[in-house]
Length: 324
Image 1 (cartoon, rainbow, N blue to C red):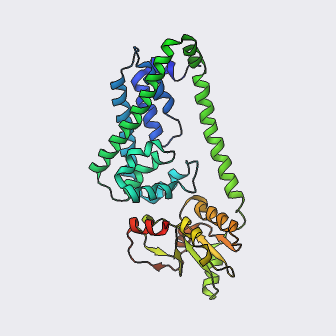
Image 2 (cartoon, rainbow, N blue to C red):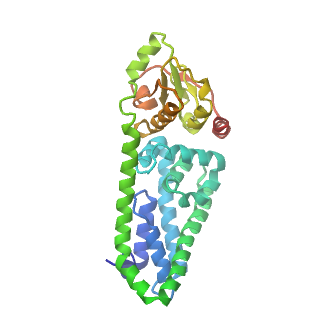
Image 3 (tube, rainbow, N blue to C red):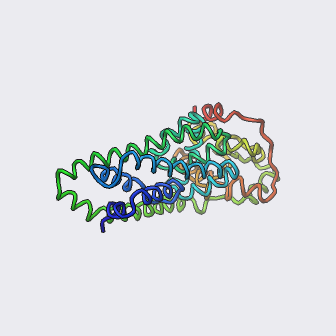
């Protein structure tokens, strides 16, 4: 099974364009082996290095621009959908928002080199008001760096293959199998991590109706809003009496959390992932009565329960403050 080298010999730049674009659209088919193979074939081969670079960069920009406009029009909802494809669904959106809040356009320069950021960065940029011109500028440079680095690595590897014909035969024979095993491993690790995290707190979640009854009865409940500051911009509301913390800030200030009452955590991430992981962290710090809110902010809003308005926030300053 001589993949991806053999297929590249047959379909050339068309395969390169399609594979890079598919990966950048969020489908977990790694383009790195194809780009490495294309770089190797550019050594006195059927592919030209510069043409392969242009094809790969254009494919990446096309896919990224599509996600940019989707993020601009649909915002947080598409981020939650993309997050479900991540190996770390508990942190992928927050990590991308933190990075964008600190660096903005500069984040796009290195996003493709960081697992989880490549697909999420364009819709986050669109959701947070980045101009199209600035996006294309930074994303174009980042795409050139990413595609160019992989092609250059493949070209260097191709020089080694030319000197060792036995190694060339081995790569042609096993590259397809290694690619298949890599994809299978991707899904296996993702599934294992998700099950491990969520099984530990499956029975600890609090129902929104139960929390509302506690609030209506005047029971002392410590409610924590774990949403990123960027999420407060389109919806500046919070649950009644909730305090806003980032997960890291909450852990650093855990001595302020009361031990004599329920501590309810909520977020807007898939399956209450951030709330669940934060609850596990607080358990390790000796805080026992901590529970994620089932459905988080979105379920509370869907049920029409009362919320408090919050003043406008500066997401960059707030993110920096909650991280300290």
